[in-house]
Image (cartoon, rainbow, N blue to C red; front, side, top):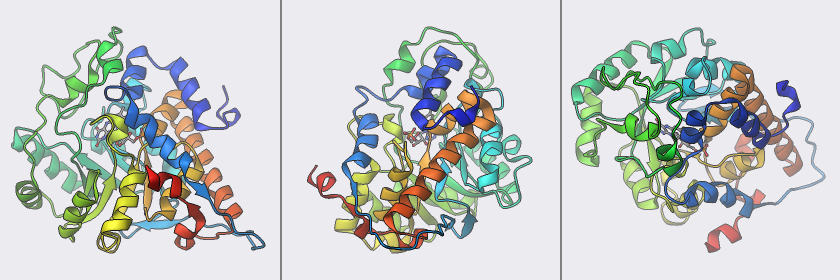
Amino acid sequence: PPMENLLNLDEIEEVATQQISKKAWAYYYSASDDLISKSANNLAYKKILLRPRVFIDCTRCDISTSLLGYKVGLPLYVSPAAQARLGHPTGEHGIAQGISTFNALQIISNSASMTPEQIVEGSSPGQVFGWQLYVQNERRKSGQMLARINKISDKVKFVCLTLDAPVPGKREHDERNQEVGPPVTSANMSGEANNRRKAGGVGLQLFQGTAADLTWKTTLPWLAKHTSLPVVLKGIQTHEDAYLAAQHAPQVKAIILSNHGGRAADTAPPAVYTLLEIRKYCPEVFDKVEVWVDGGIKRGTDIVKALCLGAKAVGVGRAALFGLGAGGPEGVKRTFEILKAEMETCMRLLGVETISELGPQYINSRAAERD
Ligand code: FNR
């Protein structure tokens, strides 16, 4: 269908589900165990209510902001998600093309189906990327990848180190899939694992060789030896770890509150709860590092609520993959267009003109705080 006929992210996901292979769907849709965290991610936003102010001129609305000091068109970014080519031949490059007119940020997965060099090629001038790292048991391999990233640091401005999945979660939809489907390719995997046509367990296949022995003490100094790019720590799920991460500023410039889209520890908290914890126990974290969140974003109001609680940016994982699956780069563009318009409508209805005005006074989060 023409992309403009699709009015919300659920409709886009529905179209993508019809179009992509069963294998791609199972891999994208899946989450750990009983999918409790995955559904809680979205529900958490629904529990927060808005407190719109009225009688305020809302003709103007500017949702541009800056992330890590770089100007972006909106506080919405693409989370690192593996294997975009499973869903559409244009892959992660297609996602980059789809968001280029928004000047939005994109984090490239360590397990992307294309090389980072291919993905950033032809991006628009100001378009900012990050590269997500899964440190490999063979540290030499990760060192080599970082050397490649350093060479494209005109485009790739930071390294995003994912911490919440030292081992993959148990994703039964993915494991159960019997359709062989398109091959999995990754710059990250060794020769014989690469490109092998295989049915279920894409996640398990991709995690082979990933290190489970990362620590606060050893890994950040190791990383500093291989790159001078700033570090974003992804997968923080408690105020204790947010506090520890902030101690590592300025090497660490941002943290991403995330439960990996419910794909790591099932029943781990949605980012909203971790945001509430940080506000309560260590609000100084917000002054030391930027706090980004992801998981369960379906509506512009979800984004606005996260920003009201102190998030500087909000990421989408599946929404970008499903957008691509539904309509290639045009589908990703439509996904961003919808979220952007919904965000602007929400801000106008709140009586807010700019991102910096958003704060806790515009929401009622009591129901979420009681959980
Ligand atoms: C992911 N995610 C992820 N994270 C990461 O750091 N490296 C990765 O390679 C991947 N791969 C990946 C694949 C797929 C198919 C999904 C759905 C997710 C997690 C991702 O960055 C993000 O945390 C979640 O996707 C956010 O939740 P939503 O937006 O999908 O609800």
